[in-house]
Image (cartoon, rainbow, N blue to C red; front, side, top):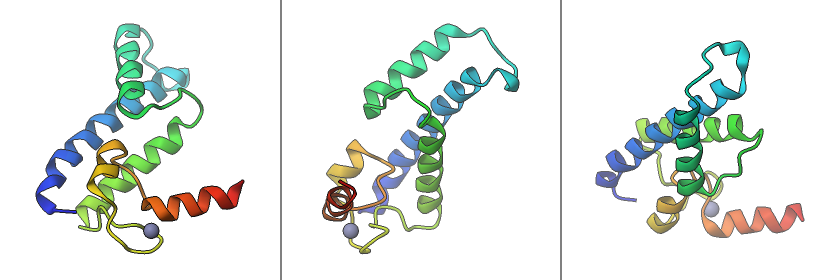
Length: 114
Ligand SMILES: [Zn+2]
């Protein structure tokens, strides 16, 4: 993972975080706001297009993952697998900017949970 790629990814993560926050606010009437349906629709569309997210209660979990990824960028730990410490391929990070694990580790975990 080359450092010069981080500003771009950071920007994407920040934009993504904004969109997720918008969706969460909209879904949680107690946080006030309301209206702005068009914006929310746009946000939904963007997130679904970007990430293939299913709009669900996972939004808060997604937000957490995005924030953790941003934190890793700040600390210069970004792009490393949290499990084995290997660098995550830039191709994977392009698809999933907040990926925490490399493909082999992710697959191992997924097969274990089945
Ligand atoms: Zn790994």
